[in-house]
Image 1: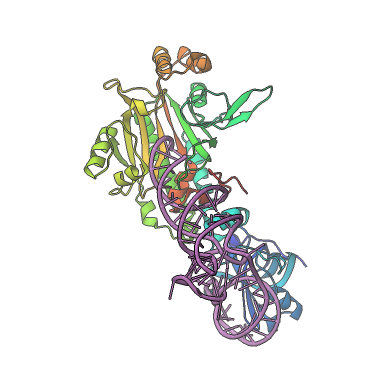
Image 2: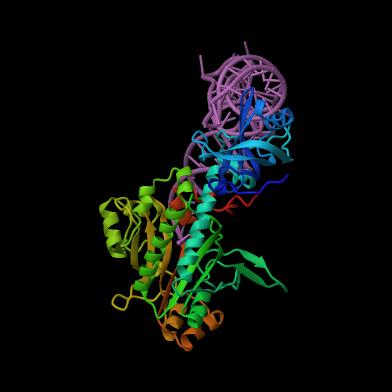
Length: 436
RNA sequence: UCCUCAGUAGCUCAAUGGUAGAGCACUCGGCUGUUAACCGAGUGGUUGUAGGUUCGAGUCCUACCUGGGGAGCCA
């Protein structure tokens, strides 16, 4: 006799019914004549109960002998139960062990504590653990929220290439890849230049994909491969960027709070910190930010970029992000439009998250005039030939346009309150770690 | 790349320069409501590698390897 298969997250709808759950043994607690196998199925965890006197001897022995992470399909009646973690419990009537983990080579990740190195080496298994599972589900919610926001605000998803020719942004380090016939290409570090082309076709676009940076950064906020969403808008300015960034973040935060309560609880995330993320965000010019930092004891001088400690210091008294705009043009890329009133400033904006999560968004208004762009390329020592198509965009209907990029992992880390960005992607790629 | 800390049982960690130990995991036994269950017993070690100092090194020194944290750079 076979019973309907349900997912643990739907248990509430099946109280009183006999159903099957296909999953893996998360943990097993047992005493002489009763045992509690905890089964997880990816949607949740179900505490099962088996009382020796109530079931066949063979079934009881099978359950009692289960090893951690053995695969099994359990069948039984669902019952509301206060003593069980999820609020529901299954009285086991049958169990089909699909694969038993051997005792002599047990599952390496025990319910006790482990070190970072060990866990990272076992990342392919670590993602089964409650905490990691919760983080990756929140990541999913974040991505879905981002897409829903842009899709419902007139943006078209137009993805940009991952293989790119050499001269994209110039400054940052690129990963080089062998292409055919001795040609070299590079892994993209931003889809932005291509967005500037697609935006002139669609008006409002975004790209969403992996980006690569061969920076030898060794901090809790860096990955060499990370996901970035980059919206771009035609007939738009710096102010539009700030408004969209603020709106989008509020939208996604609300989604996470609405749909991922359980996961936030698992992570022991202070919800009030997320609830505080509401418009209007703080707004500040680079000039004022430098002054504020200096008054707080920072060594920063006008013209320099903010370090990690500066970002944390700047937001220490804030409960929501701050949008810092009009940076010195010298520390920004060639494609930024300059402030017409103060040409030494670039019309760029960074969104710095509170709680030390730092720069989550960077963006601004792009150069729209052909001659200005040519001059900017010269100033940065970039060859016009490599930017032929990019210059075309200013020749054929050039208009003011603006956009930004947001790092998905940094944003997710902020939502989750995690110490390290490596936990916010299933298989992180970092300076000295490319496995598993 | 630089600074800094750490490598001891499968895992997490102890051990004044003087006999390498505990908890967890695993095995065996006990327990009918457990919540990282608990109680008793057992198995488990070339102390990251190579040199050096010393009567004697897990411990001190040198180099290297691996990893953590931070800086710079960035999302």
